[in-house]
Length: 124
Image 1 (cartoon, helix red, strand yellow):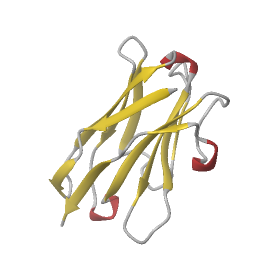
Image 2: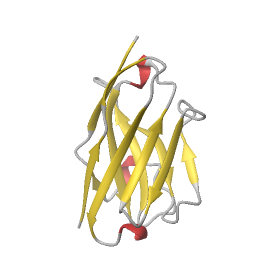
Image 3: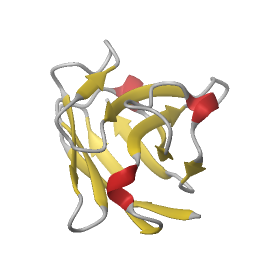
């Protein structure tokens, strides 16, 4: 089992920044590819960003490329999502997820573990 706890969400004005954190406990964190997903009201959960177990490989949704940065600190069992130049359309609940069997986690349906989510609201 891996437990994931997100934090860092909040209310921010358009153009602002937030940094989300996802703290993991349980099994060896460095064995897992990690991903961030988000879900807005009335919409399906969508992929945001992914990072390999080593941290050397990252991948982003086109909608956040150049604005968001995913990173991880395996010594702290934590993955981060730095979000800059936020837009109202980034408003959603953000979830981190872990996958033990893939190099990158880009598909929500194959995630092994999920956090409870943290709300991000961007005002215009």
